[in-house]
Image (cartoon, rainbow, N blue to C red; front, side, top):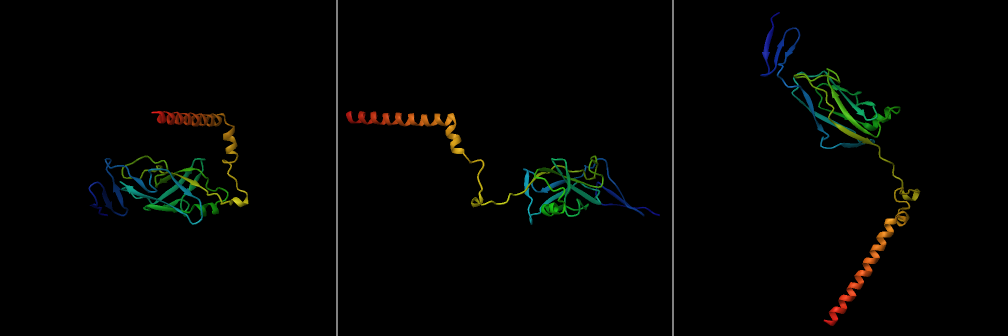
Length: 207
């Protein structure tokens, strides 16, 4: 069978016969992804609550060989690994985002719920989680850090709520030696200031 060859770009050569193949020069850059959502300028905090799914987004860079699928996982600081998204962490190889419903995940996985902790987002392609960098192929990405938390239910004061950090604060300050020293200093300053004002008034009247 005759082999037909055609060029699609200056750096990549495609050929077609009974099966397609691709030739990538060794000088090509290693592929990867750049996270676009959320911004990576600071750690993002997400609330585990009903109706508040989160979205992770990215762009491909220098990827010449598309993956058949991507695997997206969240690695918790406690060592647990959680699949991200509605399809157990496996999405299309050309996908550029995934939506994760944290609340629904916890409802469906009551034995291993998401912890209130910090996480690292892991995204890798067909070559696996620990794939080495290779020209034209997507390298795994572990750049995004984020945290999850669960909001506490509202408790009205009338039901007996107390501020544990405020209870007894006045008495604690009053019993502290530094507090007594501050009070004494203020009293001395007031007495001294009053005396200076009185002497100044007398001097002004006699001059």
